[in-house]
Image (cartoon, rainbow, N blue to C red; front, side, top):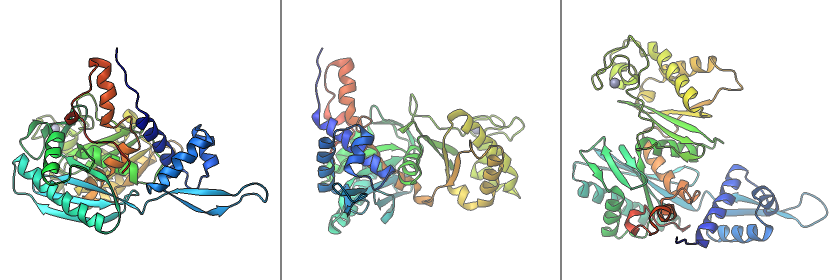
Length: 394
Ligand SMILES: [Zn+2]
């Protein structure tokens, strides 16, 4: 048996705990942090010092709650010093956004994509990231990393895009390919993470919504109905990366025949944008959307549903009616929050930008942890290229 220790990982875990605690409860003092995290006061002092130096936290002026004793200092997350890059890579465009650590959009860049060749497409991605990186550095912000989204099935354990909805790519080692494209563009130092489109949307809503939630489901109503899941504070992609693909699940026995799966009454046959376009009054499908919300709520019990996608923008009345029908079935105490995605057609890119933030705050979830997981089975470290990204706080 062989084993390794990792003091850097321990520091990252504790830094993540402190940061997330302050994100949830802004204004805590060092003493309160020690009390709520269970870490000693000296450990908290050291962690806070490092996090302030690295511009993750800021502290307020001294204040004193009582006339006796030493005054305390309130600590807050610094949401102004960092930029996160998110990229949505699709068949006809590469959409990039730069956002703050609270999800506010700083700027966006877009390029038309006319190629299906993976090397050419990723070179376009790298070129946009390079332009954004220069712009971020010129404004004095720190770049916290990049996230890249692809529509399709992504296996986060191997870094493989098993299939793509936009391209004919199969089983592409996408993480390695992105790394190569970044290296060619001189971006080897930028930590990056990859995930599939709808899980990016879910992570974006989870990290940037400002709502305290443990389990969140993102529902996308577009040409197909898809979901992304964060369950118990973790992205839930399922055994083979296909969790959340609900478009061809059954919902209404006498529904129309689906042109894709051939069955009657699947979710897409009733709610896909093409199906809604054919209706004089799309609002007649509100009860179907409400039934879908109910089924998903029963299955996953999210505390928040976030709805987004092209259809939501085209037929807002339909989804408002569905939301009201769904909420009427539940008491106020048990009802989840049903929210609309605030980033419109930039939701995927913003979600991708949340990836580096999400993984930094959960180092045990980061692919670097593949080192320790792999050791359990093989006793050897995997080659560096099988890892998604470096883990550091800068
Ligand atoms: Zn179907």
